[in-house]
Image (cartoon, rainbow, N blue to C red; front, side):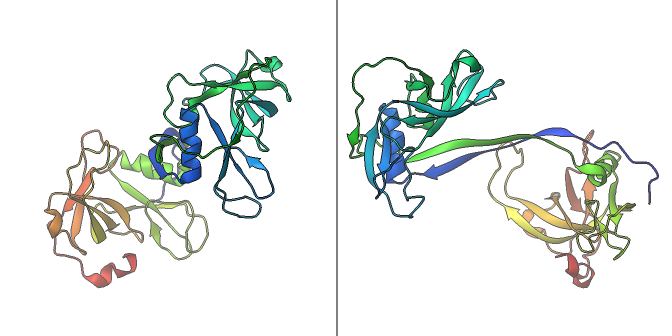
Length: 320
């Protein structure tokens, strides 16, 4: 089934977000615990340099580093860039400068935010100091930001440090998030438009004649463009599957359930979908299935047994 008209290419904002958990070694543990206690620690290299933030291995020689030292909470801006529109989760919610600051006693610069009234108030070489967060938990956000500093005050504490604190921070959980706009392109836009009409449409390669679902706009085997649209299914065959026993966040499906690769009739590539309407331990390779659509849904909610005899292995073995 070929189409003479091209549907609108789709675009949509998407968010990928997950918590990233990592354990801390002795150097990073001391650094973050120190921030909680308003203490900035660096690490000394064999050649006498002090690295802030500290690392566990020398980036030049790969030597293991453990010699912690305290540096000052004041420093000098080495370079900067103005941020006109702060984004969600950034240190300040008003325009600010991103700055690299070489703290007094350090040989490398620390990246953080500088609270300033405007870009005209920022310059390379300006003196700054740490503004500590009111509540500190042992994270880089314990440094609320940097602020301009012209005073002298008491001499900063510097020198060797044991890195020992009460109740040290041993791990962190950081929220990783990516906001972006996704466009599926011409081929997959047509596929999504067809799903809204409860049809599954792939594209046929003009060279090898295989039909790919979902379509990619090009044959992954031959590398040539695909434009001929072909309706496949709606029924298909389970080629392989897995039993899911861990409940996903924000997914209202009781475990255990089955996720399977399904070769739709007429397609030369298996797509994946959930299997329901059958006990999870009765799902099998070769099971013939059909889609179940929900009212107003833009794609099949799941597939269920079609009531047909199982497919012979030779008919789908190339798609396993």
